[in-house]
Image 1 (spheres, rainbow, N blue to C red):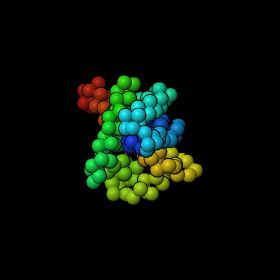
Image 2 (image 1 turned 120 degrees about the vertical axis):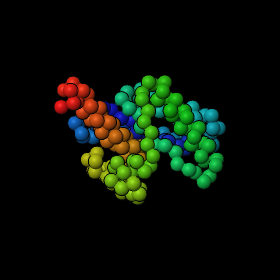
Image 3 (image 1 turned 90 degrees about the vertical axis):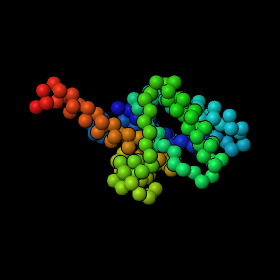
Image 4 (image 1 turned 60 degrees about the horizontal axis):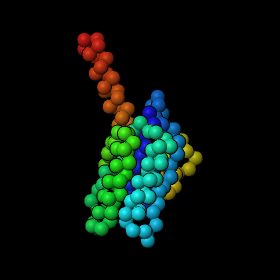
Length: 174
């Protein structure tokens, strides 16, 4: 299974592509899409949409994992991130890739095993899980990989539960 993880934003969008097969992750690509602060918002959103669409087209993922928004104390930032998130979700929808959303708590729990883990702990465990020689930079790319890892674990669990249920039906529950 190929997973695209997205850390949404309007100035910086982190992305991470990995494969998850036989309960093992493999890092394929990660990076960031950036928009200059001086551009009008509609042009920034178009650049985000085009960038995410390009990553989707280039990697053809089986799943699209994105972080759910948490409460922002700055209303303007929250609105801008919501707008960026909207065009990101639109790109996934137009590419016909199923979207899965995870809270920061779920991501930390999946990657570190503790939902209140610090950012540096998540980044280090992301490096370890992917077998990389150093922590992925910038933080937004590392966060996107952590979101993809979260989906790999969650998707694998759901797939196993479904397979077990189907096997049980075939054997009459024995």
